[in-house]
Image 1 (cartoon, each protein chain N blue to C red):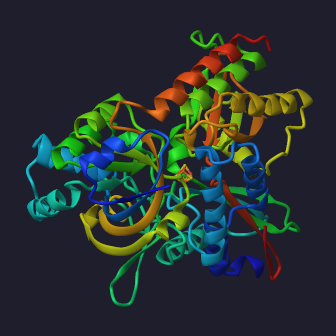
Image 2: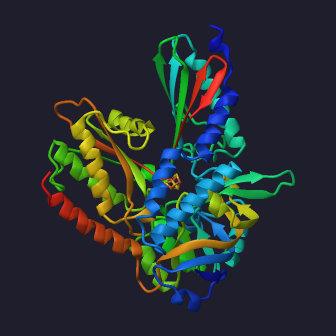
Image 3: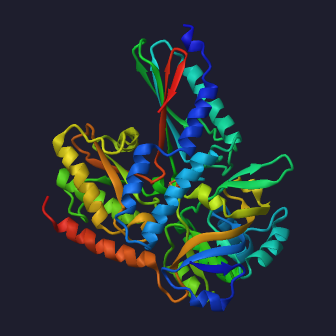
Length: 208
Length: 295
Ligand code: SF4
């Protein structure tokens, strides 16, 4: 298990390889479907004008994501009497839905790590090379366990997207994950997919 | 009908809490057994160990096993004379309250206006409630399953024959498309998964029954010996694919397979595969007079 602190520099990113187990410590931002679509449309492709506080949120995100980490997660959150938020359940969501956006977001904000589950495709793998960055796979469904690593919720942006879709700024300690896509063009997902496809071919050719 | 007037809202909140925070014993047992099959130190084994720790923690802390508390699917077997309208209202009130107490994540999003209702109440379809009348002397049974979005997204429906897979309209063809569905799902549905397979029906009944069969316990076989054999074979062959927990690669891809046969039109032959993630949350409550029991 390798300890990694956020923000992460390029040298550390390049030293990571598919299969490495890591424990992440520092500040990360949750972002999933609505957030990625909004970031790309408003600030990268600029196909829709910023609304409300979008500009201020953008400025804050630029700082948080530079060298930072995005977590594909839609948490269960509680609010205590003092108005403070707590993460109760916070496992990863399926990442492939962000495939159209992820590489652009990584490059635009200099995002070093993306955490999720299920892996991502060729475009993101290329984004990992160029940024450079890596994809960390967390254990899907391990929501209470992973929420324990969230030491503090610093705040939330775009809560109007709903609790699961908002951008939560969280401080984690020793968040466990496995590198399944690295900055050298390797993807564990592509390897498993190809190997399983070959077994499937053999099974399909077997008589009933 | 005095019984029909009884308000079960609190008891249903408890059903929701238990379903969301405690994984059924049969599922946990299978996951525990799977650990031994994965190489020590492998990502697959670590993932299973984390899953088991998470199950334990969620139970202790009474927090959701998975943050995606899914589509709530209720099957209500109500004795003749009970009001389904009243039961529906109690279930909906319980759902809103359970969401407030963070047993459930607000999960109902208006698909047109993209707005989360914040309380898990959508239209009549959310939560999904199915009513089935039983004899008046039978207990009221409410079953609840929480089906997450990640695994729902990798469900598939095939219309046979399927040229590409060489799948004809027979059990040999069924076997082929089910294996294809597992290969396509990879780890996306939070493997290891459980397969619900419906053969026949129309498109909608086929999907519905492929989920309904998931209310059965792991290891319960179809009474038809031929289908029972196919269930076991599919689990074994799916595991040969080597996808493994989370798709990391490994021995355990599928924990169990359940098949249900339906009627079909002469023109149609659907095979529907519903994929249930390892967070296989299903529980039931049984109401006999004043007694409420949870399973
Ligand atoms: S597929 Fe299941 S375990 Fe995975 S995130 Fe969704 S609900 Fe949770």
